[in-house]
Each structure stands twice: as C-alpha cells, then as structure tokens.
Length: 219
Image (cartoon, rainbow, N blue to C red; front, side, top):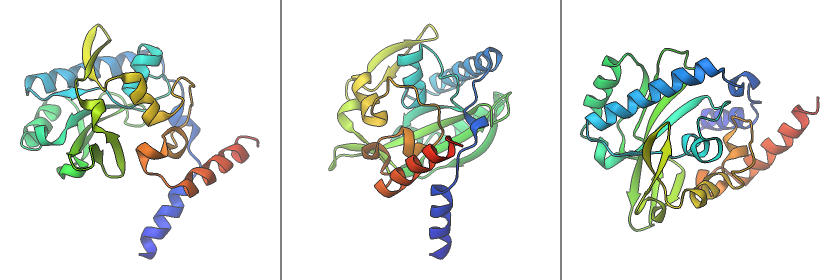
C-alpha cells in the first residue's frame, strides 16, 4: 500500500524531460512513417481491424502527418478481435525486424510495446486493445474511457496516401480526448494534454501538474 502511494506521488511530482518531446528530424519521421506502414501491413495480413486514435489521429487531422514532437505511434485494435491472435501477431512483429519491449494479454489492458530501427526514446510503437462495456456504452482500457458511439460506423481518413478507420466524427472524438485539440501542446504529461473524462486522471493531480509546469518553465 505504501509502495503504491509512493509511486503515485513520484509520478505526480516528476517534471517531464524536455528531450522526450523534442522536434524529430525529417529523417527520423521518414523512418517512423516507413515502419508505421509496415506494422499496418502486418495487421492487414492477419486480418486484424485497426484504427487511428490518439496522437496519430491528432497528427493526421491537425498536421497531415505525425506530430513532430510525439515520441510514439499507437495503433488501436479491438481486444476481442486480437486476443486469440496475439501470439501470432507478436511473432510477425519480431520477424519483421522490430524489438518487443513488453506486452500484456489481458483483455482490459491488451498491449504490445515495441521499437524499430530508432531507439525507443526517439520512436516507440504500441498496439493498444480496447474492450467494449455494453452496459456502460463505452470502450475502455485501464482508466481510459471512450463513448462507444465514436466507434460505430467509423469514418475513413487519409494519411500517407492510405485510408484508415477513425472514430466518427474524428473532430468530436479529438475534443473528447484532448479538449482544445487545435492548440498544439508540446508536453508528454498526460494530466496536461488529456481530458479527465477520457483519462480518469484526478483533478488534484491535474491542478498540481499545471502549477508545477508554470513554476518550472518560469525558471
């Protein structure tokens, strides 16, 4: 119990590292693009439905590409569709030259973290699983919640000359996850760039982090 409280306060009072959200070079972004599309090919091969959500969707809508300071690329899937294929998926990822960092096979937290040619601090990749709760009309993982209407009749959007499924309408979805998504915010702190209704982050943590950020960057 004490260890959990310590870890929680350590997260709250940790100032993010500016180098994590540095602007990636055009070469780094090209490598990310190539590897991202390679991951999509793997999912297509295994007939796993995937969609853009989070930072990739935000970049596609606002930047027409990756967000230059984003440190990862997340591809979303439905956990029920992947759970029986996850071992095969991990094997395909490995055989395609990626390095598996960690993974979870739990439905509520289905996740595969891996890296490619670049160090994981420059670009990491994640396949995230979302689980449907029909009683609450949400898709969820851990503390994150998304109204299920966003995943009904998904819209296709274009990115890198390829069409991808995305929550519909994508702009309303981005508002649910980020609030004022049109305003670029160069930070890796979830309590600062995610809405509380999406993330479940406490109001206390959000307020403390905002105060600390203002104090830190005034120095």
